Length: 338
Ligand code: PHE
Image (cartoon, rainbow, N blue to C red; front, side, top):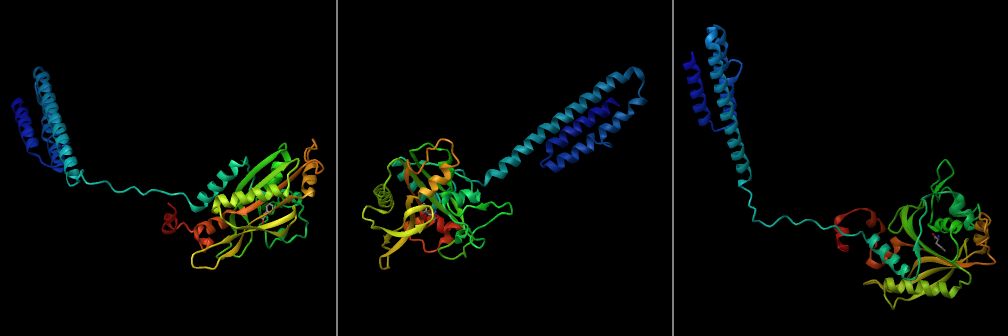
């Protein structure tokens, strides 16, 4: 009986040492240690053994089981190591690595950052406001009468609550003037929304940059000097700029700013890049009424404001003919601005 156990152990160890695949290792395990395996069957004979021999026989069985188990484990780790080595054998570690694609900034971000940098040099700091606005902040405080076309439902996205998607960043002027203590010098980059027909020059979501300067004695010369400096920094020192009289409800006098565009293969032409003007006293007084400190009393403060389309600036700077390219996320287009 004891000899049988010894034989089973020897047979098992020999068989395991010959195994050369994970599958046959499993088969060997079952054939010796499984429910009907040889050692399990031998173990069942325990009850037929005289009591005084049971202990020795049990020890023998244990020893055989342990020896087989450790042989199985050792073989398993050898086979797994071999499999790991085989799976990387065909990889040449000396080959150069795949190039990692390098992301670039979006042209709108490049132009926005540059515009902010220039205006910060002039002492403007960044202000912010919500894109979902009240009619007061988008229109009323900006002296825009109820029958103004911009307030029409055909031009503006309204919510059932009466709020709207801001049609310009000028609402940030109002929010700033509600709280800040003059002198105020802020710029507000951000999205604006209009129910425009989408084409090569219009999107229903676009990007603006608003500017506001409020102090005791701001004049038109300050406005012109600031914007001339700005556009010459952005487009080059010899950029020609003109101020064309215009109308905005919230500035008086008001202007549109054109710059002379010299595009390759085209006759130079004036293109509109911004709106601007001296803050209308009616705006100061609408906001001053909401304040307790009278700091925006139109008798005491003056100011200028401007607003420009960042998309338009990017199109001019890079000669982009279709505004829709800016939102299509086409890598072939975007990688040109690396
Ligand atoms: N808010 C105007 C627009 O969107 C631009 C503007 C801003 C004009 C500030 C004058 C002063 O067209």
